[in-house]
Length: 328
Image (cartoon, rainbow, N blue to C red; front, top):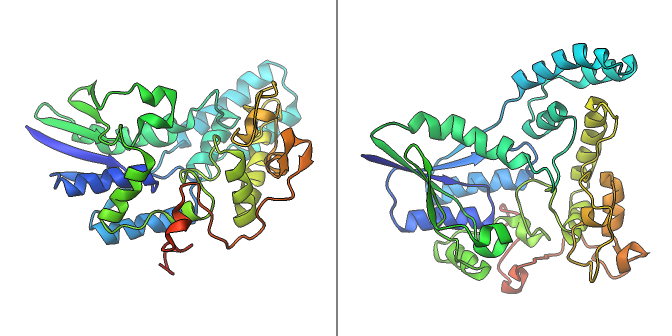
């Protein structure tokens, strides 16, 4: 029986700590895999290169391909939309943009005619889980193989993850292994220090998560930091909104479309931007992120220095982190 140990690496603190733990345990048949969603920040891509060099572990890159599904959507629009009496202008507009772009995130949204949301978070399955299964895991499966899928998830991240077991069987000799499920954030960064690995530099630039940028679950402070430090990211999402709107039958698609119609009770400083708006374009969400008191007025005390170190995890207090890998 051969055991393959596959570590899912996103460039974030938890998946990096998981990889480092696997190395510390001298795990055999170790393979690291990164699912590129197409909505990653370039510093995260650079960080993966750094990890490869610093650990000596090659990181396999995989991407989802929506070419076939987009072609199917085109056929559906050409026939069914017209049969349903959809305005010809809308049909032609959708057909114009329903072409594979090569960017997995954008292609997924074009195919769906909408962005993922907190209520319909199909991005994780379509952009991460499925490509890894199809391109890496399934080819290794067989009667004489066992596959341990190492996942960097922790119990204190969410209610759902709080009750996940450390290990369970998915079937066919595939096991989900969550070795840091009981770790807290300080322990995660201690693993980096112990192994001599620097954290992703985005953690010292106001980011609490470094997967998609922005993530549909990003909080208010993080969205504000993204707009301040990386305005080109907001511009990219704004372009994507226009494209996906054109691919939508309703002509309406915004990045934070899963917003709640109810105003939250209690403090809102840690609420996500999308939880306090009914439907928000990325520009509206950014303006909201600059406000205080439930969006009533602009917050005059927010940071305006795009070069200052800022960390939700107290990393700036260590005095050792720099904002770029090149300067580290």
